[in-house]
Length: 314
Image 1 (cartoon, helix red, strand yellow):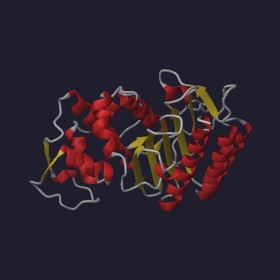
Image 2 (tube, one colour; image 1 turned 180 degrees about the vertical axis):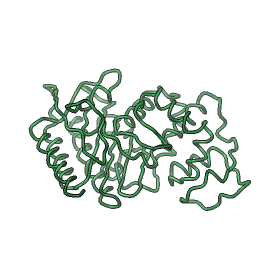
Image 3 (tube, one colour; image 1 turned 30 degrees about the horizontal axis):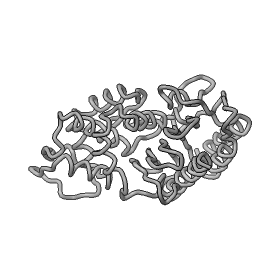
C-alpha cells in the first residue's frame, strides 16, 4: 500500500509540474468555481489518490506558480495524501484555487463545525437559547477530553459548544448533533448550505471543497450573519490544537478553525479573519501521515499561503 501511495503521489506531482495550479476568479460560489477537474470528473477516495488537475486558467495579474511549486514539493516530501482549498475573501482581484479538493477524506471532528454552525444560525435567529439545557444520554458517550458525563448530567448549549469547539470533546459533539436534530438534519442543513457531497457524523466523510463552501457561506453572512459569527468565532479561536493552520500564519492573524484527527488523518478547516490583505479560507485535509507529521505539513502549507497573501498587500 505504501508503494502504491508513493507511486500515485509521484504521478500527481508530475501532472502538477506540467500543469499550473488551478486559479480562477471568484464567482458567486468561489469554491465550486475553483475546484480541480479529474479526467473522469469523478470523486476519488482519499485512500486511493489525489485528484489531478487537468485544466488551468491563470489571470494575467496574479502568478501562483511559486506557490504551486512549493506545495508540490511539500506534498511529495510528506508521503501522504493531501487536499487543499483556498478562497480569498478580501482585497482586490480575489481568487480561488485548489488541488485534490474534491477528494473524499475522513471528516473526523470537522463534523462538529457543522453542528456549531447550525447552533449559531439558530441562536442568531432567536429560535435557540444558548443558555438552554441539553442533558446527557448514554448513547452520546464517546471517550474524549471530559469525563464528567453521567445519566442526569445536564449542560448549557454554551458549555457544550465550548467543549466541542475548544477541546473537540467527542461526547459534547454527539450531544450537539442530537440537539440540532440528528445526523439527517445535520447533513440536510450542510447540503442546503452547499456541502452536498459530504456525509457528516454517520459515515463521516467530507472534502476540502465542501468544508470551504461552508466557511465561505459563514463568512459571507449567509448562515446567520454577524450575530451567528459573534457567537461562533470566539469558540473556534485559541483552541487546544493550534499546530495546523494557525502555526503557519503571522502573529497578528486571527484564525477561526476546526480541526479533526483520527488514526493517520489530520484535518484543519480554517477562516483566517485577519489576513495580510483581508480574510481567506484555507482547508487542508491529509491522510497517511498522522500526528506531528500531519500537523507540520498543514502548518507548512498554511505558511506558503500566508506568504502569497502577504505579497498581495505589498
